[in-house]
Structures are given as C-alpha cells and as structure tokens.
Image (cartoon, rainbow, N blue to C red; front, side):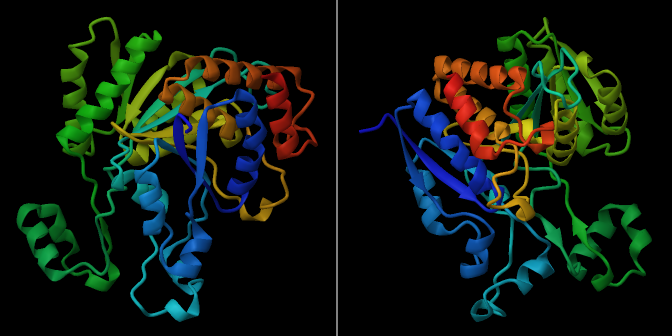
Length: 372
C-alpha cells in the first residue's frame, strides 16, 4: 500500500499538458504515492452542470492532498450558453470549482512563492525571493453576491449606511453587490501563518498589503490583527503598505520584499505581478493549504488555444509538486526536485517558447527528470 493517496486533477486545456509532463518527474523522484484520477473543470460542467461533482469531493476526502492542473472559467451568461441543452433551464449555475474546493475544505492559506532562478532570460533580477500569503476563503471571493439586489437587503443597508442612500434611485436590476467579508479568525490565521513562515525560513520582515485608509473596516481589521500578531515575533519587522503603492514599489524594488500577506483579491493581484518579475505564470506555483488537507497547482489558466499542443511552460507545475513535497514532509525530495529545475533553467538548453526556445512541454519534463 502506498504511503500517500493524491488526487490527480488535470482539469482543462493545458492543465492536461503540464500534468502529463509531470509524470516522468514524479516517476524519477520515486514518491511513494498512489494517484487517484478525479474529474473537475469546464467539460464536466458542460456535461453535468457541476464543475466539481460530488464523486470528486468524495475522492478528495479520502486523499492526503490533491494535484491540480488548470480550469477554464467563464462569466455566468457564457457558462449557461455552453451547458448541455438537456440541462438548460434546470437551475444549474456555474461557479468556479477551485474557489468552491478552497471553501469546502477550508484551504485558507494560498501560498505563492515567486523566486528568480539564474539563467532565466525573462526579466531575471538576482535576489528576488517573494512569498505571498493570500487569504483564500474570504474577502471579495466569499461568494456573497446579489443581482438583482433584493429590496430587503437595500433597506437594511440604507438603515446602517448613509452611503447606501446615494443609490436609492437605482433600480434593483441595475445594481449588483459583492460583499467583502473579513473575519477576525480569517485575518488571524493567515497573518500568523505568514509570520511563522518568515520566522522558520529566515525572512526579516512581513509586509501587510491592504487599503485601510479607504476600506476602513475590512482592511482596518486586517491591520489591527497584524499589529497584535507582530508583538509575538519581535525579530520580524511588520511593514504596512497600501495595495496601489505596493504595486509601484514591488515593480521598482522587488528585492526589498520577502513574505507578503493580504486578503483574497489583493493577493490575486500581488502574486501575478510578483510572478511576472521572475518570468511569468510559467514559473508561478501555489499551494491551497488548510489544517489537514491541501491542493497544489500552477497559477496559470487553461489557455484553451494551446491545449494539446504541448507548448506551454510546465515549470510552474513542477514547482507546485515541490510545494506538495514540502507539505508532505518529503524535504529531501523537494530539495532534489528544485535543484533539477534550477539546473535546467540555468543551462538554457531546453526552453519552451515563452523563454525564447522551441522545446515542448514534454521535453522540458524529460529534461527536469533527467537532472534529478
């Protein structure tokens, strides 16, 4: 019997390609694991009206963690138009399966490392080593949205907020509301994880990226909690920045930053900019981590136009496997895998199109496997 059970979820588009490229890498590191296929993504939605079917949820409940490729996701109207005609008009509503998965399993930490590897021709700047801690289950991605806006909700909001009264003349059909929900528990656990990571990995500071001068209540709560937690870590500096200014400073002086922590939407923004600083989404991995379960993935999308062409860069997928190995406690395997990735990048002999090369996704996978 294998030591680990890992859900295998390629998803859509190039998610299938990069996970196929991961097979020789996983074989070479000899991880003692059984990989359990599980359905997720756009094609499952189109056929069944559920992008994260119950059978997949049951598989995940019986696994140690999950490995995920990518999904296609479209706005509500487009999603409905592509649904199997037999399911049309039966009340099916598309929602992002990865967001649902994060909330269902309370994977509240979204860990996104962005490190510059020597030899990368894409914007390589020595010394960039940024780790973004993005709160993964709350904020503007909580899923509490309204359109049209019910009269009862409008009346309640108007009662407690004079700013809501400015919209009294707007019809319910012409208004949409998405709530940004931050709880003290949600703020506490993600910020504490960031400080613990900084302490355990030798980072001198934690940067809180919010907007408390405008979002006074939600970002204000994040800021107050961060200051409380910082007292327990006297050797680590707490830096507080606003999201807009932070984008400028991160672009100007990326080497100044190490661990960064923020809420859901801001984390989405910060991590993509950080990824571009080290070569783009082809180098950006992430872990969706809870207390007892985790799912690891590259952060890029499904890129349907490249699906099946084996064109995209699979290194983000390999770095996601490295994160998975770290989480499983397989530290030596993680170190060996990252060393192989570094060597392939620095040699520059095998490169996908985004790095100015002509090699395929699968050829990069073989090259990394050969270096392990």
